[in-house]
Image (cartoon, rainbow, N blue to C red):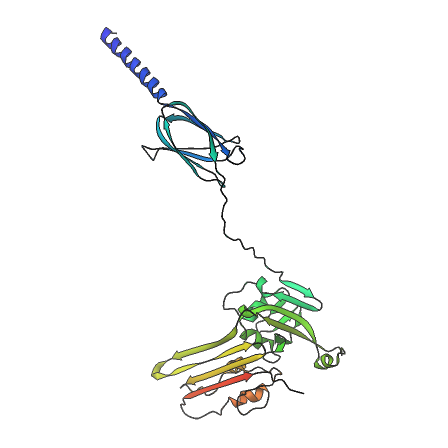
Length: 344
């Protein structure tokens, strides 16, 4: 090998060795430990991050050990920003000027910090059914229904209760013969009409029991005559106002509109019904009439005209005979049911 080439190779090797030595001298180890300022105990699990001041993309991370110590190996010399984070402690920040070699930061104090967390509300679902004496009680809050569900849809989801296509209700195989609302008759003894008119979201609980006959309740002597009864208990925090409305228009200026609204407040009941059309519907539908007329055994302070104290006569008062030709009908009715206290 020519002498000139050998000399150049030797010089290059010497330069590489010196560069490597300089590089080693410009990097090193940064270490330290964390301790609680109150207890002086080591703090483990501290998230430690160092970021180069000259290049924020150069980030190194580590976690303190059980004894609170941490270290960064091979850290280049320069200015670094140290961030230490641990739940329950204030964030610790410090700027480090590192010239290489071995830098011991010593014990870094972590300041405990109380955590402010929002209020936690724990809600539990009540049992779906509870037996109280001879009464089976179901909680509506234990059953999920869609927002516009009826009482019938709620009842169909109760354990041991079935509802057939015709609306008949059975509990443990026994037919429900009447439905009460807050212990009072509602839509007479027909369970189907009551359950299909009441919205599910106003119901607190459902009770099923064998109701004694009126004579047995009056005399206090059980005559063996019972009626399988379902009592719907309404929520006290919910105003019970419900009903329906409809409207439509067709060709040749034909139109039809109507509906009914019901308001229950304690023992008082109010209902209004209306109808307007020019399509020869001259009477209210049976569903609308049943939606506003209850056959409860309460005395009415205000009544629809022309009737006895029963729902059949009330219904007849709202009906008219069929008229020939194309007729325009506008009709309205109001039903008020208020208990009247008698002074003896």
